[in-house]
Length: 113
Ligand code: AMP
Ligand code: ZN
Image (cartoon, rainbow, N blue to C red):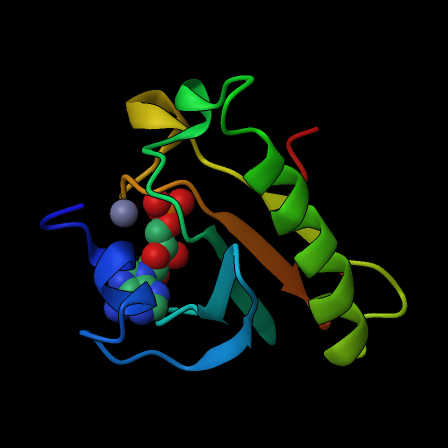
């Protein structure tokens, strides 16, 4: 997808701190970390947001969560972590390529739910 920041990161056109990659998923450290571990887990397929997940593309969401479990283990998040998806304007999404924030490394506060 032209002009998508995360597609460019996945393609290696923009540098990132990669922590995980497989055929379907790319993961890298957030440039503005909100916790000691703050990793963005991204499907390689360009899907704009959670609103665009459907029966044809939802397998990559499952792949993201499989990757999250592996990354969390590799990062030592044995005591737990939080996974966040911001969707659309009201959800506060700023990069329109579906991604999951993996946050951990401390006891997280500021729960909304
Ligand atoms: P969201 O606000 O949910 O769309 O999340 C976008 C995230 O991308 C934010 O947490 C940003 O800090 C992060 N971000 C933006 N540009 C980069 C980049 N070049 N490398 C790594 N993370 C980035
Ligand atoms: Zn994209």
